[in-house]
Image (cartoon, rainbow, N blue to C red; front, side):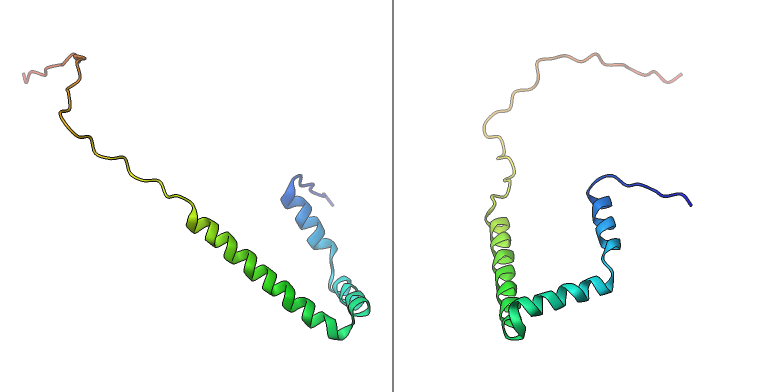
Length: 94
């Protein structure tokens, strides 16, 4: 059976994602409950949610505050024609 090796960020993410199985997540959840207790976990999740909302609003505000490129102003006054002469080709109908 051939095994493909992917190099780069996407490959690392896929390898990590395949390495975590549902029972791994249950063990992590159990450790969190033991460390923080059942009463503090909802408060921690609520605080994390608030922090993410604040971060998202700040990022959106930065994008809104970024200066938008303005179109070039139209030229005013007399516009001088180019002094270069281009050879012209004439076609004759036969």
